[in-house]
Amino acid sequence: MLRYFSTFYYTIPIQVTLNVFFVVSCVYNYKKIKGLRSLFLYSILSLSQSFIGIYVNVFKSYTIASEEFLENSINIFIVLEFIIFYLFLISAIKSRLIRMLMQLTLLMFLISTLSYWIISNGFNEGPAILTVLESYLIILPCLYYYYELFKIPSSKRILDESKFWTITGMLFLFAFLIPIFLQRNNIFWNFRYLYRTAYSITFIGYTILFVFFLKAIQCRIKTTT
Image (cartoon, rainbow, N blue to C red):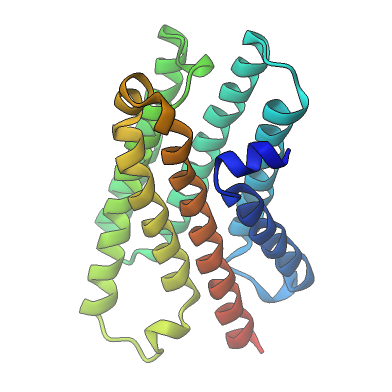
C-alpha cells in the first residue's frame, strides 16, 4: 500500500483523511449544516470511490475485469458528482434565466452521457472526455456566481458565506482537472513514465476541494450558532 501511495506522493491518504474529517464534521453538526447537506452525500460518495480505487490497485490482482470495474465506478461517480455540484450551483445563482439554462444543461449532460455509454465502450474506459466536459460546465456557472456576487451588494461578508467557499472549492478542483485530462492521452502514450506523477494533480485538486468544504461548513456552523 505504501508503495502505491508513494507513487502519487502520498496525495491519496491526505485526500482521504480530509474526506473522512469532513464526513465526521457533517455527522457531528448535521442539524447545523442545512444548505450543505448535499455535500455530505457527496463526501460519502467520494470516500467510497477512494476506497474502491485503493482496493482495486492495492489488494486485487490486475485483470481486465477489475480494471473495468474501477472505470465503471469512476464513470458513475463523475455523473453523480456533476448532478450534486450542478444542483448546488443552481440553488446559489439568482438569475432565473441562468438557472433554467443550467437545468437544461444538466438534462442534456445526462442524456449525452448515457448515449455515449450505450453507443461506445465509454463506460468501461477512463472518463477523460467526460471529466473535461464536466469541468467546463461547472467552471462557467462558478464564474457567473462570482459575477452576481460582486454585482449585487450583500449585507454579509463574502468570507463568511459558506456558498462562496464551496463554489470556490469547485472552481479550484476543475481548474486543476482540465489540463491533466486534456493532455491525458498525450501523457499516457508519449510520457508514460510521467503519467502517475501527473495524475497526482487530480488528488491535489480533491484535497483542495475538501479544504474549502471544511471552511464552508465552519462558516455555516458559525452562522447557525
